[in-house]
Image (cartoon, rainbow, N blue to C red):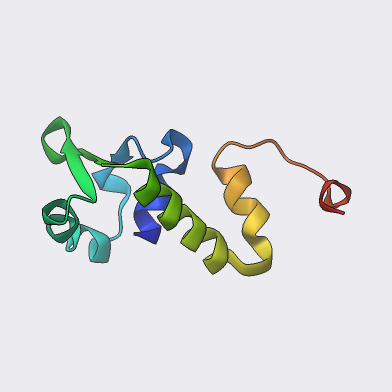
Length: 88
């Protein structure tokens, strides 16, 4: 799920290219489809989260996984860079 969130962050989980996913993630896609977490797009060339909350949860887990570098997850998702003073 973290891989899907990371690769789909710029589209807010609406279009995650299958070619960008890790092999371990690809092997789990059918399980995520069966559980209605994702749905295939363009005949399986891309995937979309079925509901915003699934993407939001996965993206939150991605930010936690990044630890102190979590602002980089936001920047990689398209948010503008910000200074540390902004958080103070």
